[in-house]
Amino acid sequence: MTNDSLRIGNYTFQSRLIVGSGKYKDFAETRAALDASGAEMITVAVRRVNITDPARDNLLDYIDLERTTILPNTAGCYTVDECVRTARLARAAGLTDLIKVEVIGDDKTLFPDAEATLEATRILVKEGFTCLPYTNDDPIMARKLADAGAAAVMPLAAPIGSGLGVCNPYNLRIILEQATVPIIVDAGVGTASDATVVMELGADGVLMNTAIAGAKDPIVMARAMRLGIEAGRLAYRAGRIPRKLYATASSPLEGVVR
Amino acid sequence: MMIRVRGPDATMDIQLNGAPYTCGDQTTVETLLAALNLDPERVVVEHNRTLLERGESLVRPLSAGDVVEIVTLVGGG
Image (cartoon, rainbow over all chains, first blue to last red; front, side, top):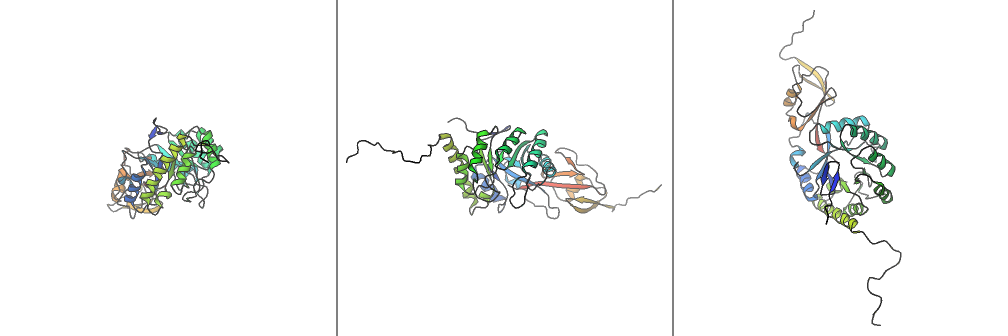
């Protein structure tokens, strides 16, 4: 089988699963889930150090940076300025120029502010970042973000942490049909079959955090997601049969002993 | 002409991570990180909205009223 790696900007990955590092019980669990998932990229957030009680442990001590690419995000940002400032802080950590561009429009749904996301992406692309904007499932927005120079576009399946799976497969199909850059579905996945559906539609990858970290057994779910995504990708490449209203027999019609 | 004499215990007030903070008036970014027990390789510093890039000198004196942000990478989705 030909090489089926995922290329985003100057980065190449064998795994099409990207995981988040939030909401775990502790760093050891984060590391175990990352290992079980087979993911080669993990998101991190940028936050003020707690001056009065700086944590002794650092998340990065638990991640093998030789095997895993860090993807900083601008989570928690509600304006273009906050997003750009956070992205610059992230890059100054010296690990990567990748950035998940996230500008939130509403704290209940955590839906992205599309306008601000596009503006921030334009600014950050000009500053040389490899941008992966988190966006809604609007094909027009996806196209604008790609035209603005995003290295990949990341439409949501459903609200962050909602576990609803793909709410609008039709929009996602249109986005995939028109895509000029990799499309990574980010947010809303709940279980392995959701991830499989995403890959069967033809997405280039899936990003998830809560689906794994919030599962009763995150390590087992991480493995399930790994397999689900591999299965979905293979099914997509295999070319499924069409859906039909009526039956087509699988066994020969002639030669039955009556 | 007014001459201001600085004693060894002279302090100054800055804004650190969004809250008031008092430090010695000879504090530099480097000594501030040391006083806070922070590894310079694991944090990123912004001094009066100027981002200090990796490899840049942290021997940067602070002044009263300066705004300092010290951030790090943490778990997130």
